[in-house]
Image 1 (cartoon, rainbow, N blue to C red):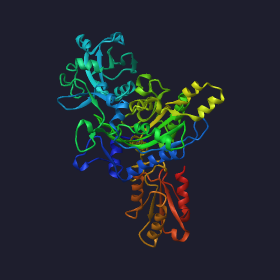
Image 2 (image 1 turned 30 degrees about the horizontal axis):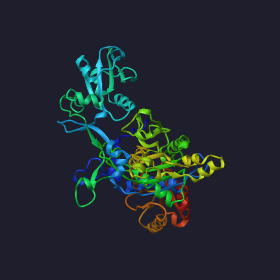
Image 3 (image 1 turned 180 degrees about the horizontal axis):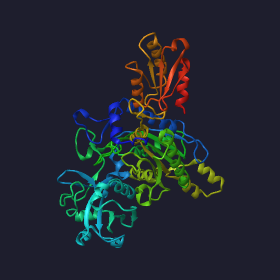
Length: 563
């Protein structure tokens, strides 16, 4: 029997029913782009963050230089001095061009608008020359559909493949959808050909009244694209004016950069070393969507790793590969996880001259067959440290002094000028930046396992280290001393792990509840326990049962949690 496919509707329903994730302010109708974590969700997300902090900050391994990685943590404020965001480029450049539909009040990013043009000309003959939207309309091409499809050309291709209803007027796509210099070429039966292409923001500014709305197909209802800053504004102090304007941070990185010099002065760190932070960030997303994937309030797990400039390539590759391996280690091993290097035209302003940028991506049900970003690994060069040093007015005075490099150059007989020039510098930065909410969502999607043989019809296959509840402790019945033995075991185990005591309803219903919570092991105190000093342990994934000594349960769990 083929496996039942996973759907977001089913996953979201389970999340709500079992208390993983709820919409914020639900009793008032909710607020778009904001989500609350219930008891199970809070434990799951905390376990992910704790695993990251343990593996990255407290117990990191060896780097490419053969030495153990030096990593420290910080916890910076959400609201920072406004000049931080001027120096980082967020005030001037953290904008998206937005378009509104005046009738429906819907809104989309102008740089996510794609057009589908259909022609009777076979093959690519009609697209030998690049045309503007206006010339296409004047020359009689049929504009059949416009859609805002977020992201890369590959995502647009996936959209067309998985949304045949959009294209049914022209029959099914006949053959491969292939890259084209101006977009994606789409072959159709009966000699027709289509081209899906991005409509530039500049063209939209000129021809926006001619373009059909992606929501209704009507022309003349779209507004001209205009810039929209994604940062949330607020005011610090009693007077609401420009002098007191502040921003909720759109990323956690800048707090690390502005405290870099304090960390160097107060800690025994030296390049190469890293500063890590877990914290909230806020972006005023115009179209939050796909459950918690794109939210207005989210949490980041971020590292800024400071290196000598000439070591950028080796450290970039190290962090790219080790971060990909880490996500596999917490339960995302398999074909749903991929590592993708960015093309040059995708790079952020701070990474244009860097060693590279890559994304660790997961195939969510709402992105399939494509992928969505979990974590980015980027070489940010020395952009941020240099910007902050210059903006605060201290410039080269804030360069890092590399004493080890100074000694090395002295021993090599370098001149005094060369030693001064090379041993004082702004370190380059490799930044692995992960989303705690996206990571939690990926764990939920990966763990969701339909199984018609179980009473609940589904179980959550979390890795034991990440599972919200590590074990269920059950008395088989509420008599013959079983509740007392079970409660004693529960009180003992909860000193080390999140476990749950449950004596309500039949043992089958209790197993079903634990399956939906993703609890890997259930221990049942039964009629044999008092005499044999053993309990039954039920394994979530196989539903197999075995007996374990009552005094060995703690050791059993400890072994399983470390696997």
